[in-house]
Length: 579
Image 1 (cartoon, rainbow, N blue to C red):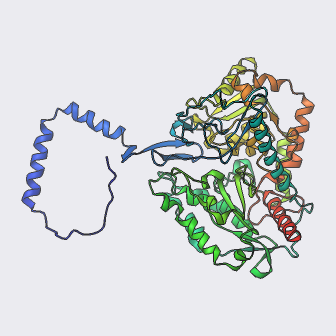
Image 2 (tube, rainbow, N blue to C red):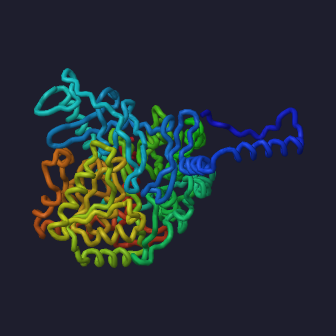
């Protein structure tokens, strides 16, 4: 059924309807309906009602579903609007490595397990299970003996060398990013002024203003209250808000406006912040059937605007930074219709892009923490929370808050859930919080579960990273990771290179092959090891993983925002010294 477009243009000939004709039509319709058996008519009406959430237009199928991430109903579009990911990320584990290099799409699978890929490299949304999106597997993984996809035990030396070099490249990028971490905990502003562009409101404020219809069947406005922190959560204490995971852009913007190093003379600045809410721009089109030109329009307008600015022309954008509150590939569309091509535009190569999940082959992509529910105002807020979670009673060994992915063959979630549930017979070892019950919709339930758990399972979801990782860390729950791209290759300024200090890593391939029972493995970790990791998380990591409110006055601690700004300033200083 072709899609119908409504036009406001009047026809050339307009004729008032004859009342007699209207009356005759009504009489004919009534006589027709009168002849239809009542039972058949009722069944037909039930059919219309039951299919009302599925709209077919052309070859686009819109399915209205429920998502834990958006906390309400929304619509996905399959067909032309399927997301298309071309992210070259390797899986590196004990027995095998999957790799797709930037110039080799071919048959090589990506590592975003449990997300499954079509043969054209895209994800096909099917439905939601347990409150989370489930992807339909339509991919054919080719095992060609002449050119094997899976390398084991030294086969194909050239490919093994290529993979090793790829891993080395990612690690070198992270070392470079870590070299920008400043030793000064407080920002030194002399010669390090930050200029905030006064962008036209269509690039930020107007996007927030579209919150009522940003996501179909959901009012997003409640998440933009309190300067995008959301509504307060009194039960958890001071500084706790119902913050949405995609609210980072306006949160960061508010903090930069209050930064002590902000200056108003662009000629004196060293760092230029571009307050474009690119994630919100994407979100408003995600579930609507619009063309790629419409999706890209604002990004292209931004480039045109920036190119007219003298600071941009001076260094080709190298001293500019943009914060994007969604994952990298949402901005790297090449084929298909998912997301925009903002970061594929040539002019966007030079600026630093700060994202909640970086693209590991892009040296100017830097991962920064997802916003959590905790936004302290003072050092006292942080210390009070540290004391609360370090002294909390950990009555559970393991917990997992999430959902299974029954349609994702490569997902390890179902295996982990089965292992967790089977351990219940041996006492209170593991608790699974099933998001289908609505438990994940309430931040209090998730945080309280993590506060009473020693370990929190963090398998990949729709992409390698998880907001839940940061929720577990700020709750003092030791994360158990299964993919190095969930954290180890993502957040160089906020998480240490030595990941054993704060996490446990389990090879997801061993879980998939049921070679390890994760709950039983965690039972063998000594109390001293657990206590050492928890103290490190609570006292060393936690303050730097949360974003304070816009007027936060932190003297003893650096929060996530402060770490980002001092690192950016260090970077532009070193850039000047090597120029």
